[in-house]
Length: 266
Length: 266
DNA sequence: TTAGTTTGTCCGGTATTTCAGACATAGTGT
DNA sequence: ACACTATGTCTGAAATACCGGACAAACTAA
Image (cartoon, rainbow over all chains, first blue to last red; front, top):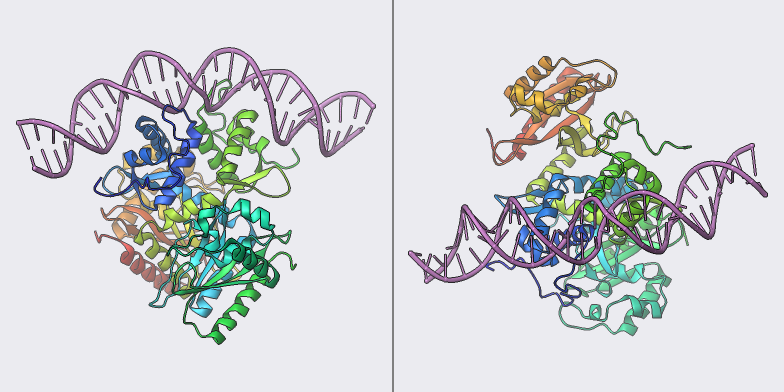
């Protein structure tokens, strides 16, 4: 209890964790990996068991299987486990299975080197926004956000682009109401957000200033797949005081590069 | 049958695939992911079922669960699946969970930029050698080897370093006899290999010329963990005709950088 | 057309796995 | 010393996940 490894403060905790319920090993594995990703640090088996609501004996069994497969590995002196080498290889295979993704990563690298700013590749995961990859600005003011951490869509510029294909009703159904509340307590009016989405769709880019936090100016441009759909965006995270001429210059660059990466014009 | 999606030509195929044997879902999942990694391309559910020796109905069930979790995703028009977005995130979390790995990757980048050669980060996976990450030479002669593909240890320079802590008897037990046979049919004498391992251990680096293929000169230097053990190596893959002065210069650079990355001197 | 193959789904039975709980051991704090 | 908590392993028993097989639909080839 000294460290709060378990955060049961989740609003939706215990959603269907009725005790005495038997679950499949596969589902346990999925929950375990998601829990580990959310926690972002090695965990002990006991804490994993509590976090995913599984019996300890079952958790040991599963963890040992995954350790054998190197999908997890022991870290630290004892008892802590985290993702293993196999996961790296699976993830690498995912990233490189098509030439398109490789081109995107190269562009990300080039943008970062040329501008010295923080650049991100963003997408959706379920009804949340995630950073898929990033290159942090080398400057002293490092505004970094971790790859893989789920963020409410309305907090982000990219989110406005990624939802451009949805009708207002679909948006209403898709976004959890709680996600309109910003970290500092302010609330975005849904109607305003819907208008932003429509604007982003029309303009082909999106910008937000001091939204998720007070210090950043974000701009995002869409990468379209072969069907014209947007499921990834390229994005700059700038200090809020970046002068307007430079912002515009960066926006043009971002849009041009994203257009180059797109597989359709539309 | 038009494409050979299933390669049952594996020498160890059907090792324990006695029909009528029931297996756990978890084990099926592990086998499935390994199969996908080995195949290195999207596969159809039917082919996966054959490759891992599972009933089709079971395979559909498992694949659908993994699709829901985004650990797999549909690719192409229909029926093909490959690793999904979640895998990328899990793998990314693995790569960055400690500062040490990040430093290693930065060094890899720098070495590649500075020298223009192919640089690799290598390690073991079970009793095979794998490339964990690489930066390919930008030149016209691209000697690339895929991340994650398992290779026989005796074929590699890094392998000789990674086994430095083993006794001759341990080496005998560890290496499958078939792994001494090179791709072109030549056979490495085990005694010679054991001597190489000892030499590499003593020298603190290892070199091989025209071993796994006729065109490459490989050199590897050890990255030691906090206990002095070697579980990763830094490695150059050079064209075989690289002049000796340059080779020596590169070897010095490689050894210096690997030493910098090591957490112990030993 | 027919015959053959593959895909995706569904269902009932049983071999197996998950579960709860106990246990020894180790650590912590008073 | 004590009480308390957590770890890792084992076991019996019951719930159920996996399996085999059947089925319709789609596709191919002759």
